[in-house]
Length: 222
Image (cartoon, rainbow, N blue to C red):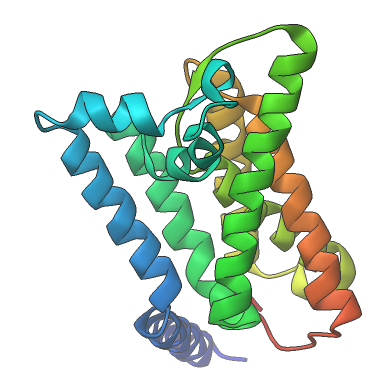
């Protein structure tokens, strides 16, 4: 193949890739809604009522048995400690959410996101109860790690052809950096919530990909 033809082919592949991305994110309703809600909640937390939102919404073992306590496993998923925490989580949610939502469908993706976040928080509470730890936790990382777990299962079950593509390699590098940052570098990282969310993503990946036999192409990735 001549150099001119190779360049033309590369340009065509790039155009096809970005066209795929445009189509995916144009209908990524759940992902977009989740990002918007998280941003709105962060903005509210910077106002005069922010301390009330954190006080009532953050995850803490010491309040889990109160009338409101159980709801903290849900509300804490939409709160973030600072702008860096929010930015890194929303970046990963956008990078992963659209393509996985397109693959699984809107309802299953929303279910998986919520279940990963909730299970991650309950997993964290169990760890705290066992080791006698009481800490305050906020963030969507557990839910987002559910996306990472789902994608890991998809890669394992999908065969060699799905792994040997430049776009997937790029995302895997980003995933790895995110996991290192969110689990080991970020101050006060709740590693147990991240692990719980990841495990739930793997379990629901088994359900969607293997049990439901979802053989769709992961648009934008493969």
